[in-house]
Length: 214
Image (cartoon, rainbow, N blue to C red; front, top):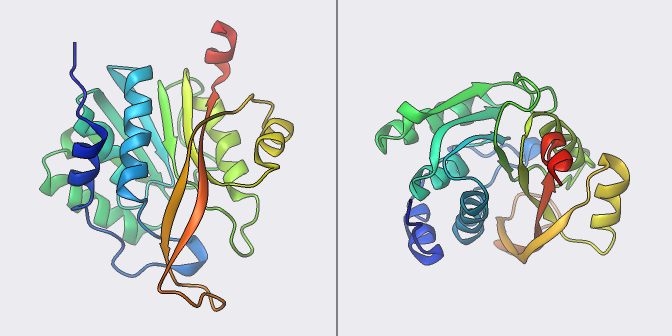
């Protein structure tokens, strides 16, 4: 039986992980807060260990590396639309001797190159839709629901109508696992502070097979 690291130990290790070299505003590129990333990995690990996992919008590979650190990841695949981010991810994972268990694929997470119900867990921090990409997080969630046998652990900007919107637009019954704050560097014109704290909810949905198992 795998003994999971503590959330504090996971977050400490993830705080050393590299971010984006040149963050792209249109893709809302920023590194997931290490404490949130650690919690995502922990929640995934207690649900499926060992696991085959996918990360939609995997960026520089932080969440996949977090899963690797739990000792529960047997294979992971990241889907990332940005070739620059995918390159950083492969290099960072190779430097940490994790690339043998993780692939990073350049592609659109809304049309994932994965078979239905082909992974145990999907983890993700999808775009919140701060500008013209409104609703992108729901599109990612819809796609994730088609490939997950079990849970989707997903981070979303918090609002009072979030759970109703997810339920109405995806058909899943979301459950809030944690409410916290994501630190986002200023990159929009209206940002006045160097670092913004955005209230976020970590939610769980169940994939098609998971819903059938009840």
